[in-house]
Length: 177
Image (cartoon, rainbow, N blue to C red):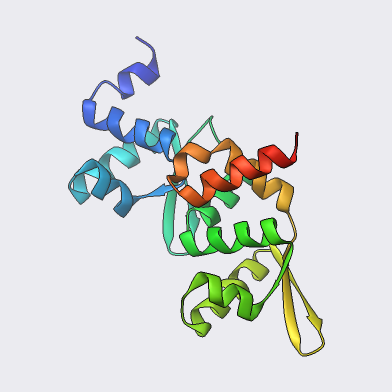
């Protein structure tokens, strides 16, 4: 048996590893819910898997996100961490599909309070994923890295479980033919 087989000998540890492989960028509470595992048990196994270099973690805001060590490269990890957040993902997909949108158009589609939409747009701008231009009195938003974001959505499509991602990938693929 090799080291990986030894480390994954326990069913619960194997379940965690497989979950992270299937859903890169998962965080602890999400795994706890999906795997129906006690906090202490999950923390122990995550640390064990990290210590044995099968997985690694990365802080994204206040969440520690986990990735299988050799499956996801570093730049993709940063994007996946952002795309795991439903509202940010929705805004980015809209901007890629439509090109440019003003605040009211985004606000109408996202259906959250104006301050929450503004918070999310500022977050995306600070991460360097969108840019803002003033046209008259309105701010217009556009996506800076549309091809890179699209590629991550396509590559990890099955991990998002989101119809909007499925629809986007299908549309993007059709456009590129």
